[in-house]
Length: 116
Image (cartoon, rainbow, N blue to C red; front, side):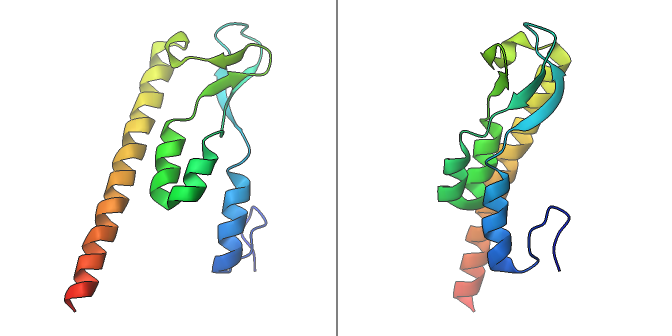
């Protein structure tokens, strides 16, 4: 049995396949604000942080990803339209809040297991 992305449905295989998938850049449905020709890709250069720090690190690394154009290079968020900036900022906020929530849930779980 495997998932739709070809990853095996067993836990050890899922872990290695998951980390292979985050190495790719993600194409965003937004044109480059400089050249208006290419779709922008979100880089995954901070995937090493996700690998070393687990789920919390992956969520924070995902929030810190930058945007690139194939012809223009790295593009700061301030050059995009306001609605795109607000959507990205909202996603980054929820990603960081999710990372904090996962971290707190693990701590509560550890305290609960220790008290048993």
